[in-house]
Every structure is written in structure tokens, then in C-alpha cells.
Length: 339
Ligand SMILES: [Mg+2]
Image (cartoon, rainbow, N blue to C red):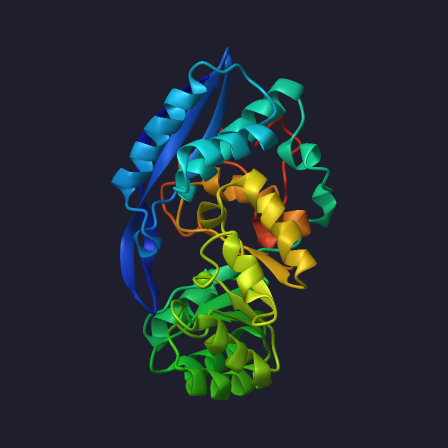
């Protein structure tokens, strides 16, 4: 199998803000894996926050390309694990290759990946639409633009969080989740959790900062929160699933953090065994990354698959998200095509 990769830079429709900063573009690494006439696709999102700058991801992909070069097309689950053991833990790179392997294998068998995983596409629920952190008026305007989406995920961690969520609740009447990206102190989060629940917010993602002592911080918020607490940044890899058991209600298993579709399936099982709910999220990306993640959507409690909708120039068409409903394609593999 021949693996090639190239950088893909996409522009956000609006500057995308979270509690740690704001961005106007997102750059990923697109992977093409060839076996005979078939081409499988994957996308790696470098994530400096977790120690994976783009150069490191590209180096890891070069190593994976050398491992794959002498191999013929074969089933992805055990091969993905072999690659992880051989090439180490640059998980965005492993994730992109896992996606491309599943895409190839599905095309080879003429079946969509979700079906190869034993899942029922009809069980895929709805994605939220994220409202990036900005000034109060901009956030309200973004909510107006998101009219077709039934669930809003509101980025928090600014000075007006409560006022903004209250205004969004009154203006839209929609279901809402909140993501503070670690932007609150424990006491502040504990107070806000009760107030936000009173406004109808159903779930809070990463209220307090990740890193040393985060399990205790999350547990302290969870102990008083009327709504589920989900770890995102604190769940940086598969090993964090067991670490966070009992401290949160759920984990956000972004495939770039976990290591791809195969690893995502295993991490989902581990989370369920630990009594944790499962969220699948993504980063700003093309539809390649989002469509790979969406294959697991039938297993989710919460889905945040709007990463490609936030961009203005996604070159691919994959999973359909009209009206927020996750509609998986019955086309072989990931069912991706160029727009
Ligand atoms: Mg998050």
C-alpha cells in the first residue's frame, strides 16, 4: 500500500473562538492510501495543545508509509494495532491511517464502514452546532445562522457566559450544551453548573482546566452539577478513560486524540465498561475527518460533528448533517467524494 500526505488549510466561516484563543484558519494533513485501484482517505489534525505539532505528525506519517509499503490490503483492526505498537503514539497520524485503512477495506468489500463495525446507521442521532466564543451580539448572530440545527453547543469561558447562554435560550428555545474548554475555576464552575442547568443546559464539557489534579477538579464540579460533566481536554488518550472513571459522566473521544476508528471502537468499549457516557467530537477540519468519526455515531450519547461545517472551503463531501441529523452514507468505505 502506498501512503502519501499533504497539508490542507481551510478558512473558518467566522473567526472561531474558545477560552484559549481564536483562529481564522485550520491546517490538517490529508492522507491518501493506495491499494491497486482503490484510494482510502484519512485526515490528521495536528494538535499542539497535546504535543503534536504538524511536523511531528508528518514525520510519523512518513514512518507509517514505510511500514505499509510492503503490505497488501488487509483487514484494518489488527493492522492498526500493529502500526500503533511499531510506530508509537502520534495519534493524529495513527488516526488518519486507521481511517484510510477502513475506507479501503470498505471499498474492497463494497460495504460502508459503519456496517463493517456492526452498527446501525439508523441509530445515529443529531450533531450539535457550535457557537464559538465571541462578544455577546456575535454569538446571538451565529445562533441565528444555525437555525436548522436543533442543538447548540455554546463555547464559554468569557466574562458574560451566563448572560449569553440566557439570551441564547430565550432567543432560540433550543437544546443546549456548554463547553468551557477548561476556562472556569472549580468554585465558579460549581456555581455556573446550577445556573446553566436552570436555563435548560443539558451537558457541560471540560468546565475546569486539564493537567495535574484535573480528575479531582472535575469530580468536585460533578459532585454538585445537576447536569452531566464530560471530559474533553482531560481525556487526551485511551489511558485517560479509566483514569477519569467516577470523576465525570462522559468522555469526548475525538479520534485524533484516541488514534482513529479502530482505537475509537476500543475506547468506546472501555468507557462503557467504566460506566462513562461517550461523546464523539472533532476539530475544525474537512469532511474526511468528520466522516471517519461519524462512522461511530450510532454508539454516541453526544455528537459534535460540525467541524467541517465551520469551514468555508471543505473540498470533500461525506456524512450529511442537514437539520443536524447525522445521515451516514450506504456507499462503500467512508463514502467520500470531492465536491
Ligand atoms: Mg471540547
